[in-house]
Length: 220
Image (cartoon, rainbow, N blue to C red; front, side, top):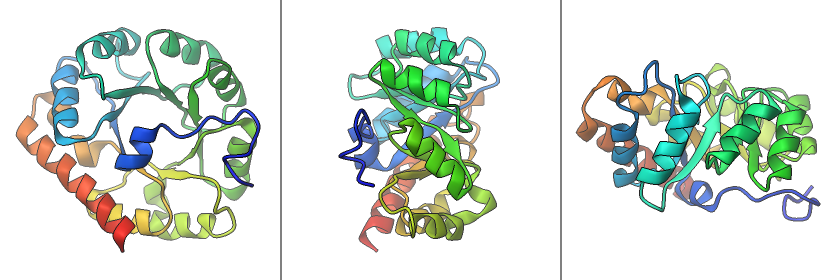
């Protein structure tokens, strides 16, 4: 089961594979979204996932696509319908993330030439997501089983890229990467209060610590 030879499968976004981190920007209000996104890119986290649960998410996706540096890679998360996937892609989404296995979302995303990252938890769900055409599978919610759960999945499924997301703390990143994660998705532990007007300097510090933890996990 080699991901490079499956017909029609799109590769993981190279910036995500290289950096090992996607930042999940889930906000109750979008007032501080742009400033926080810029802080992350300055610190080296260039893969940013907005979520459909954020008010005005599609409009903000378009705005960030225009305003952020060219190296920023923007995706849309919490996508559960094919229509939402297509709308997000029309507004510049470069990858689509779902909380579970939604074959119609994967199909619409891949048809548009964009990578799909559906969520899964069990071996059967991981295999279903992969069979649907995922570029990688989001292991969600990762914190429930921790790095040990990921390691157990990666053992029999070594060719399926896994991205643990959901409650992944910065202090646990190296363990997840050492257990086989191709990258990690970071929400609250990375963002802190930055989306509510908190310190961007502290956000940048957390971002740099996260990237360093990925490197530690890969070198260990």
